[in-house]
Image (tube, rainbow, N blue to C red; front, side, top):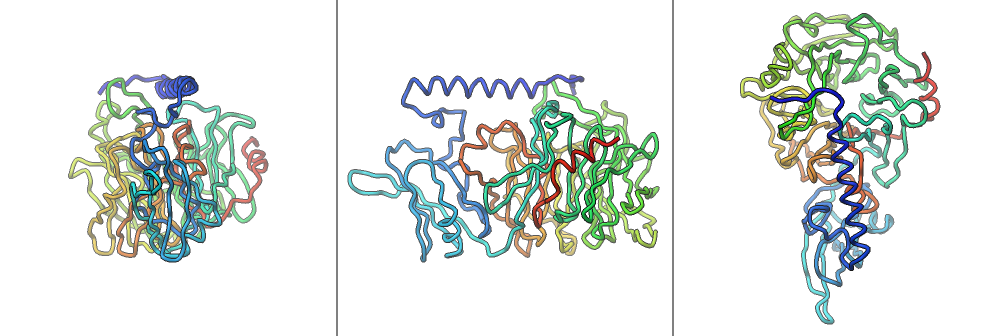
Length: 486
């Protein structure tokens, strides 16, 4: 494996090249009658973009705006159920919010008919369904927006988005004062009143019970930065990974960036006392432990573990299994053994990011060829395991030929959101999919935007999308003031 070390901004060059291509096409487009969107290679070649054909959506989702790629000069789209119909003319289809809400409430299937005009008659060009689920979805999501190379630090932030509209607002941005990295944001199972995020350097900020404070994470030489958090359902504890992380850039490899841990352990923080709980089975010198995830009842901690090897020389030999350990934190009782849930290494595979459904039945995780940082592995796919029946569940419909990762469940367990590089292989974008009570997944849909082309010209990746049961109300200035405190 050939890796070029250092801060070589290959991703930045790719981004700049993309901007130059867009600029050139815009200039050329000004001299001709051909719209930019019809230029091959710039936009997807499918008839409908984004691909919303056959997806399952909740009733309270924002309108799915899309564009139609057709040579026909006069087109219109009719969206209808047996009880209601909406007609939109032109190649850009955007239904007003009031009509969209009425449309989704009028039936469980919406037919989308694309028509073109031939002479004096409208002819059917293409038709597809939208399936409407009665299962509620959480009203908000959070995510980080960041340049895809992970080397551009001057513009990033954590944002929240209302799913029933297009409203987006910052939770915390790094552009106001310091331009440092902000990451590892998460709520306690979607509770907007209990959340944390990390600024590097600067420390971990905790918001809980109406109080915002910075956590003291400087425990010793080894434990001084806490990442990959998972809240205990009680809100009293947070499990973290403690890692020595290294990043390299491939000179010749389809996966552009490689990230690995030279060592990693798992610790648990009691947020009431700011004291650290260490469990020897989670801090073995013979293995790398990372990505902790509490079960919904808080009685078991799931995590990923790999046999320790010399890195980076043996990076392709590092394969993580999915493990768990019993515990009762309130009584200071911990299991005496580590249980292997999925031994991916036996099949020359590796797992990361275990996430349990709120009822504790399904375990959703990412599987890839090796290592632990699947977000830059093109082969990374989402997998699911039924913990009750001890069987794998087919969720192949969620995956593509590009990276899928960073997945979380809605509070009722009927929806998942994840990031995917499908589309261009460079930017991660948020996709939402329905999961029924038997674990059957529906076709995922791209988070809707007001304009169908917004993602085409988006210059930042959506990172770690998570559902929230409400809106984070903490003023951004309050968070900034806490971050800036020494």
